[in-house]
Amino acid sequence: MVNTDKASESRRVASSDDLEVSAYLEIAQEKGSATSGPEGSLDATREAVLVVDFGSQYSLLIARRVRECNVYSEIVPYDAPWEKVAHLKPKGIILSGGPASVYDADAPLAPPWVYEQGIPVLGICYGMQVLSHQLGGQVAPTKTREYGHAVLYQNVAEHPLLEGLPPSMPVWMSHGDQITSLPPGFQSLAYTDSSPVAAMGSDSGFYGLQFHPEVVHTPQGTALVRNFLFNVCGCTGSWTPGNFVAESLQRIREQVGTGQVICALSGGVDSAVAATLVHQAIGDQLTCIFVNNGLMRREEPERVDRTFRQHLKMNLIHVDAADRFVDQLEGVSDPEEKRKVIGETFIRVFEDEAKPLGQVDFLAQGTLYPDVIESQTPDNKASAKIKTHHNVGGLPKHMSLQLVEPLRYLFKDEVRQVGLELGLPEEMVNRQPFPGPGLAIRIIGDVTREKLEVLRSCDWIVMDEIKYSNLYHDVWQSFAVLTDTRSVGVMGDFRTYGHVVAIRAVTSEDAMTADWARLPYDVLAKISSRIVNEVPQVNRIVYDITSKPPGTIEWE
Ligand code: XMP
Image 1 (tube, helix red, strand yellow):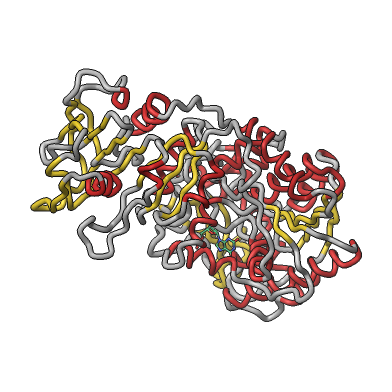
Image 2 (cartoon, rainbow, N blue to C red):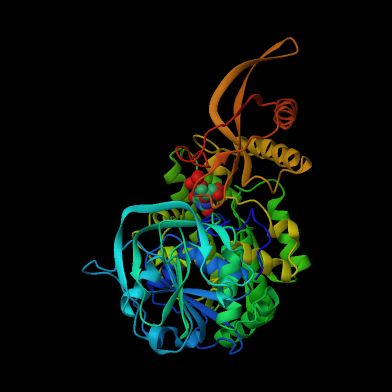
């Protein structure tokens, strides 16, 4: 799929859309339920390129770059046996970088199938060194680790891997070892000041790059990846949102058969797209459950109802459980405790609603690829963080559902493209992330009905002004926080003693890090004056100018 939206490139709302549903994912997995995936039912015409992962922080990025060229890509561990990956019928293999040195005692090396299947191979950084090492070349440590920008000079007049690239171009390096002697049958294709072999190739379909074409600091990197895919592997770029949808519909039908499926809609993009795909595949075999937890933005429950029941004609159970949630939250002011209460209450409500449906076989949900990868990497710090957000709620004792996860292999921006392809409203597909526990974690201290109403009014104004100023898509999130501080003010001739509201707006690529958005002063001024004028309980507005780290995006 072509990713044209730079801002949303790595937009991965780690946890925002499907908080509660994720609890079910863990449950179902613990119960050993099946998860959907391409195994065994892949469209034979789909072109796939494998990224063999040696532990690089950029493996996901490599897969992203390949997919940007409309070629499907999946990441597999370096020790995956051929039987586990053969169903993908790869047309190319990319060996990722990694922190090891090929001479480490337990250095991860490529499995034999990488060399035996006759499939073109591109090694990147450590992946190149692995190729060289295993094919008879020499790799040795550099005197000093080469890190950062370098200029790549081509050695060859013409080469399919370098087609259309300038004779010299900036690239980004990060390595401690380098090739000192090429394996037999290889030629050096390019060099940098510090690396005599910065790119290499052989006639038998093996290529290596010492630099990282997948990072933005190598501006022509995607062109290089494209050359590998199209000129070397013979891919045609047929992986498009339309083809993905057609393929998914077929796969969902195969998996579900005549079974009954439930799906919890959160109002977020992921569950919306997953439900829509499943609905298009199996129609009324799907029942969606939307729980209004009373912690949503103004008009949000109505919007979800309108979209899914009226517009998309889905079976929708709309549960107004606002009182149940708010009652449960009474007196709870600790952020993690709030999450726990909300998660547990959700599970109970969901169970109550699912019971009368009778036999249900499947749970559809919008798990995304980065979450799948992160959950496969237990020592990944990012995954620990996301888990914290998800780790809410207890386990329903009796439910044993198989998972339908049509988005399991997609990145966030691909999900958005699929959403548009399915005809979901643009406004829903490109909405800013909203956390599962909703406004409860934007009210500092205990949550009451009155405070929720105050915050909803402030939030409405923030959204209104941000949208009016055309800033909605420029910022990652923008919202109001009801602090637990009150301050003295003056209105007309009267003293006021009201709430202090903080405005938070951040820019971010992936929510893992963020910066406070430099909103124009006049937009801030408008937000401030509207809130203090329109929301009587509030008399002071402050703007949060903390980045993440050390702050977090949400206040709780
Ligand atoms: P923080 O506050 O950790 O947030 O910087 C990062 C992203 O995650 C969202 N977030 C949550 N999403 N449940 C969710 O579904 C949660 O408990 C939760 N806490 C934070 C936050 O809105 C931001 O997009």
